[in-house]
Length: 122
Image 1 (cartoon, rainbow, N blue to C red):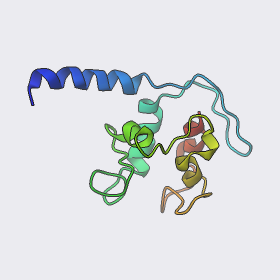
Image 2: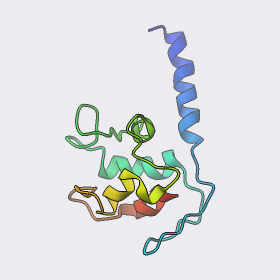
Image 3: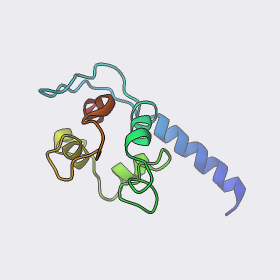
Image 4: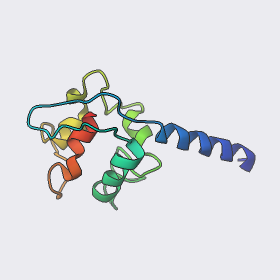
């Protein structure tokens, strides 16, 4: 592929990912409220990297969705649509994080690391 095409594609991808931010506060019973702006790339990706995008788990060639930093957003919002923006508490990712859908995630890690449940809802 031509390098001149890759640079604009990469730049647009970065702008798209960094442009994702919360604009509504979501308060769910028994979950810590998130009352600040949430950035997908700054807040969620580091949690995915530490707890999910590990060898044999949610990385390229392993279990879906691929939660590596450069693929997480597309994997969550893509064809399978693991995030339900109309009803966040019905999202597959939220149901797995809260143990309402088996297997609960993240496996072998503390439940709700870094308040990921509230951040995902936001």
